[in-house]
Amino acid sequence: MTAASTQPLIAELRRIVGQDYVLTQDDGADLRAWELDWRGRERGKALAVVRPASTQEVAQVVRACAATRTPIIPQGGNTGMVVGSTPDTSGTQVVLSLTRLNKVRQLDAGNMTITVDAGCVLQTLQEECEKAGFLFPLSLASEGSCTIGGNLGTNAGGTQVVRYGNTRELCLGLEVVTAQGEIWDGLLGLRKDNTGYDLRHLFIGSEGTLGIITGATMKIYPMPKSQLTAFAALPSLEAAVQLLGLAHEHLSAGLTGFEVMGQFALSLVNKHFPQQRVPFWQESPWCVVLENSDNESEEHARAQFERLLEAAMEAGCVTDAVIAENLAQAKALWHIRESIPLAQAQEGLNIKHDISINVSRIPAFVAETNALLEQKFPGARLVTYGHLGDGNLHYNVQAPEGVDQKRFLAEQEAPMNAVVYEVVDRYRGSISAEHGIGSLKIDKLPEHKSPVALGLMRNIKRALDPLNLMNPGKLLHTENH
Ligand SMILES: Cc1cc2nc3c(=O)[nH]c(=O)nc-3n(C[C@H](O)[C@H](O)[C@H](O)COP(=O)(O)OP(=O)(O)OC[C@H]3O[C@@H](n4cnc5c(N)ncnc54)[C@H](O)[C@@H]3O)c2cc1C
Image 1 (spheres, protein in one colour):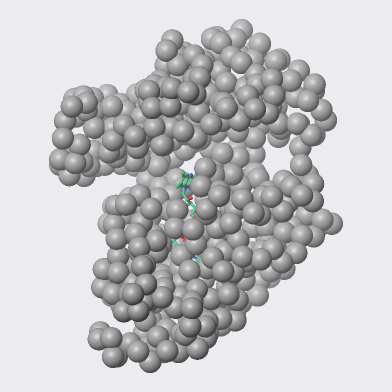
Image 2: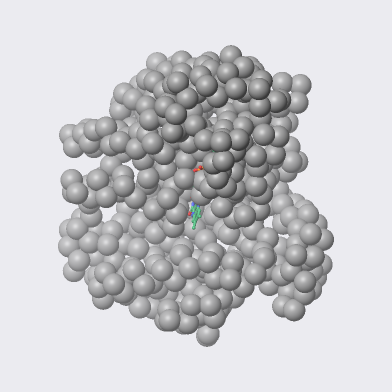
């Protein structure tokens, strides 16, 4: 593809969105922010970055690209974990950035919904709800940058899934620009609608491979009167599962967060962020941070928490615990959990596994996989933490101390993944609980998904995107498309 041959398309895109909102390298624009995956693993080369400001503009852009068979890479905040929102290195793909579609369209207090543009930053959505006295419960450490379109594209999880579900469960309607450039307005906000296939569920979690989400209607909840946080020390992972059962029993729907953290993960926070005071980590193999949201009062929440922790200590599954006295303390305790990925990055290169297993089988999974890794990769350091309430662990591996980290990763990542994913398969788990597949795991998917499921996915892709222009090279190999 030559610059001359792409000039008519670039001119048409400029006509649609305005001169300033089509960026190309030929015009001297710095495209790094859109081309580079945020973890710095890969940088692609875009034909152009296009930044429409409305659904109608998105539809026109898609039609112009379809007419010239130009692939489109939808991008929100570019905070994804699996290299899903950046172009390949061919210089032939258009990055379609949704960040100028950033309006809150309507908050309907009676229907308990909020309708927003897809490029709305998650934190903006949370703040808009809070101003009106509501809670939008999706909560990720990337919430200051990620967009609701990206959250829907990846079906993001986060720390409140145990109570409110993934992004999918929070969505009551979508507006989508199809691969043909048509606009599907599915922003009905209905809680019941049995009129056939529920199309929104096709687009949620499809990682931009079926169409472009331009708007969404999301569920909102009454703001709890009190949100209390506790931090507990535990003797084992079995004890953490036992505590989770007790927490469901004592707190019921009040249980809004349950995160587990292994001793080595906490030692990294202690090492790299010494200003944070990490309780219990030296004497406990595992710690848990848990949250109780209460619609009655703080006293009620505290009394419930105290009864839960007493029962847990009696049962021997908690050895020590603190309940935050105020919001600042609660934030500090959550900050410890949120700092683990950053502490890991400071420690050096690591291999990430975002896996899910039935909660009851997690202790056996970890014991078995730890033993295999220790035997096959002596010195490898296991950083285990995550959303135990959802059966989702970040089961990561840090290179042994003192070795050449780049070399360790180059040589050991594939055999290590093979060991971990083999056990995941035996436990009937998932190799990607919340981060998606992107291009990072696209080769792994066929090894771990049933051929029947893959065949159905390919049929859906062919039906909705017959020209294979929507985020090609992500999620699903489309050879013989
Ligand atoms: C510090 C940190 C913590 C994180 N914690 C979590 C966590 O707890 N749980 C979790 O699930 N993830 C987490 N993530 C990952 C990431 O934030 C989520 O995947 C998020 O949903 C991505 O949103 P985004 O707007 O950045 O999307 P992008 O990264 O831009 O895109 C992600 C995917 O969605 C597609 N896409 C984007 N916008 C649209 C659209 N409008 N229509 C169709 N497809 C679209 C892209 O093509 C791509 O395939 C974390 C990331 C960071 C940096």
